[in-house]
Amino acid sequence: MTDYNFFVEAENLKRSFSTRQGELTVFENLNFGMEKGEFVCIIGHSGCGKSTILNILAGLDSASDGLLFMGGREIGGPALERGVVFQNYSLLPWMTALKNITFAVRSRWPAWSKKQIREHGYKYLEMVGLTDGAEHRKPEELSGGMRQRVSIARAFAIEPKLLLLDEPFGALDALTRGNIQDELLKIWEETHQTVFMITHDVDEAILLADRIMLMTNGPYARIAESVRVDIPRPRDRTRIIHEPGYYPIRNHLVDFLVKRSKELAGGPADSAETPGDAAANAGQRVFPVEVNPARDSRGMDDATILKAVESH
Amino acid sequence: MLKSINQRAAILFLVFLGVLLGLWELGNKEPAKTEAMSEYELLMGGADQEARVPPPSKVFRLAVDELSDPFYDKGPNDKGIGIQLGYSIYRVLTGYLLAALVALPIGFLIGMSPLMYKALNPFIQVLRPISPLAWMPLALFIIKDSEASSIFVIFICSIWPMLVNTAFGVGNVRTDWLNVARTHELSALRTAFTVILPAAAPTILTGMRISVGIAWLVIVAAEMLVGGTGIGYYVWNEWNNLDLTSVIFSILMIGLVGMLLDMALSGATRLVAYKE
Picture 1 (tube, rainbow over the protein chains, first blue to last red):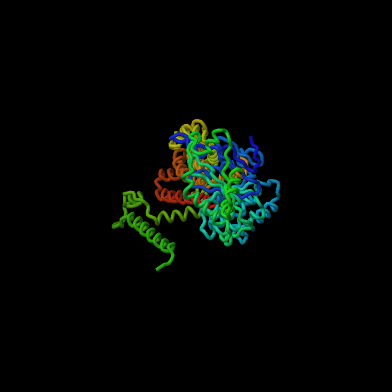
Picture 2 (spheres, rainbow over the protein chains, first blue to last red):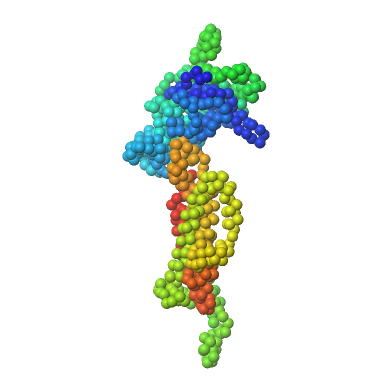
């Protein structure tokens, strides 16, 4: 069945909860793939199930149906090969910043010496710029931005194969957010880790991602589109807005969030409201539609569009 | 105008103390003698036949006396206040530590496992409201030793707050922190010691603090019942001796030791406290 060859791949994923009103299906027949080294953002309104997907990827939640693979193996539970950065940082408040990191490093490489663990921890604290005494402070004595830096350093320090970021900058002010985005970009350029990130911020997604997945409103949410961001790297927060592809992508995303996420919101699969549902009912796996607003805006004649459509 | 609130509080405290002691002292004065005492009055220790609460000055003099030699031992009926308090503290700490040895692991188990919580909760709910002294006859019958029985009574009364608080603290560790443990593939044992225990420690220690307070309340009553030694026995013995000055003095000492025990535990609580 798995004839696609993605590094991370979801196959007809479904998650439903039983409530007093009956079964609530957050999403079903969800299919998507991620290449190794790819930075993927997922955008959608609250309640569409983004966090549920991330939690299933992390192994903290499990799917009601369907399969999830990483590197050809099924994801069965939480593991060190998948690092998570939570929105609320989730640092252990009784440990210093450094301890929070060395504790993670020690779980990853139990055989390492104390010195080795410390040095490794420091390396990542340095990357996020937290070595001027802040590393010996406890989370309560750090600002929100510094806490999230520690949390990011912790996730990168265990060198996971897949990094999961759950709205990491949601609780930060715009200025701090910008700075940490820069740091995240810098670290990512060095490590080229595979990243799956949830965000609400359209500009953030364009700045960071290779590809942006757009989710319709839940319940029965779907990943409707996969938007290619082919703005060249290394990117820069101040210059990216002058890139020719920037506004076409941005308009496409905003248009989706404001209008189409609602229009495309589906019902149960068997009602076959959309062609995708019909295909799913026929037993086919439906992947999100690939779009590239930046390229499209450069002006294409009808023939190329036709070809692009046919290739799907 | 004094700047610090502490200084102002200290002055107010001294004023209140002065007023309280002054009223107590003046309200319990013996009436002045108007004529020479008769032979009979001298024999009875004064013209005033009405019993009075001893004034603070008398209590103070006794306190200086007793505290200058707290550890003398002149037979079963006359021991220094230090020895009596020592016995009580020994019993409280023994019973309390035994209770901790039982309550903390069981509390951990109940907090981690909803099954065990449901299975053991009825026992806890029935046993917890029992006045610890109600156990005394049964303890004396089974253990056949008054010393060990009073330790058992302390054990049974200190167990509940520790047990309930440990279970509550362990059961309410934030899911985020448990998720951190899970995503880092911590073993069950390492999760228990590096995540759950530090997270629940402030709640556990609050339970331990409540327990030591209750244990100190109960030991006085228990020792009044079993007799022999200890501060509770001392209070009752001095009452039988009609020495109210000693009774008041020992009441104050009970309060003082109770305060020190509480301070020790609250200090320990501060050590493990954390802010989110």
